[in-house]
Length: 431
Image (cartoon, rainbow, N blue to C red; front, side, top):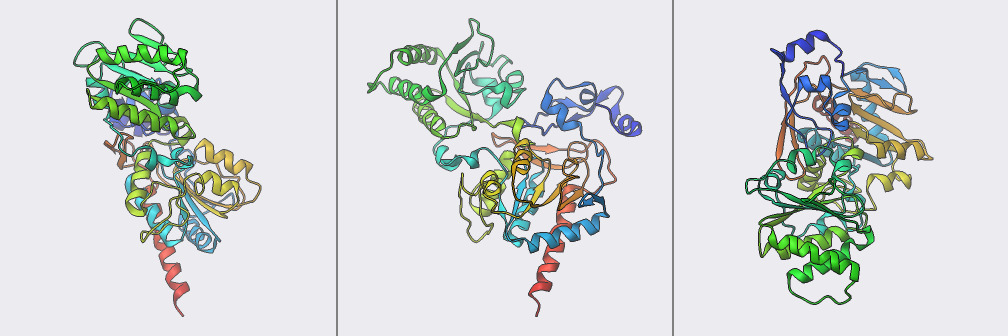
């Protein structure tokens, strides 16, 4: 990556060693990168993409024309308040403080709010799936689990550096073995890394068979092939001291997660066992999915798919009021996208038959040609942003800016927008 200013680059390099920085390109929120490594290439496509944006075009715009930021903010407030039904989305490439301001904006404008996470597009939703889950953080998997079982997921696609950071290091208690269950092996097969090809529609059945074996119960309809795989899994589980199950949040029914949660709970009564779920980092546009979900839950009682934001009580309508459905059904006429735009939102806007007002607060510039669009430019989210993000296992990660910016932070831009909305609301309510 080539930085836009050599002086800025030299300022943050210290005797040839870059400062430690955090990559917010996916949910791993990797803390082991440096400013020097992002110049030479990190080896991770998500990280390289995250740091590639360095305020290349920080201008604010209205309908494709450059505009002072204050005018763009005033127009954005006007269009939000004039909309029949606004939607606030994005969020995952911003900090927790910024998401809190977004929630306040959603209440002020009676907007729908959803972070476009895969979980809120599933009918069963994370609330139902995760009740009673036995979980742990990534470092516990790295340090304690001598058996890691990948259940129907592809960690290389979902979180590219997960294996490098949390599977390949040798645990405290000796050698780690891995087992991949599903179409794709997580690691090349070897004596310590096994792969059992299982179709996605059989993952639930396999989990139930293994659970029955763990609980020493008879299975109702044993399948020869699955029974054989279950036997081999049970042998590996019996010889392990600590087991970590790694799965994904992207499966559409929620039944795989539900069945795996039951298996993990049953096994946890016998020995240390826990589950870890990986989000689809390549599609979200940022790594703060857990932060967006948590802030929305604190304020509105649900992680997203909220049709009308209200701290007095909001509905939770997964697979009904999520970003995808609201856009596809043309139920929103104004969108406030906060942070970088994910591939899913780009596709939805491209396919949407009805024009919408799109207000984008970001350091990137993908909607400059969009009709009825407003862009509120801000400082680089990857280079000049300060604040906290939540890793998907609940650990708080702090972003520290490593380059100065002449642009206001995304938090200040949103605060100013909230102030303009509040002033206009008071004027409208004054006789």
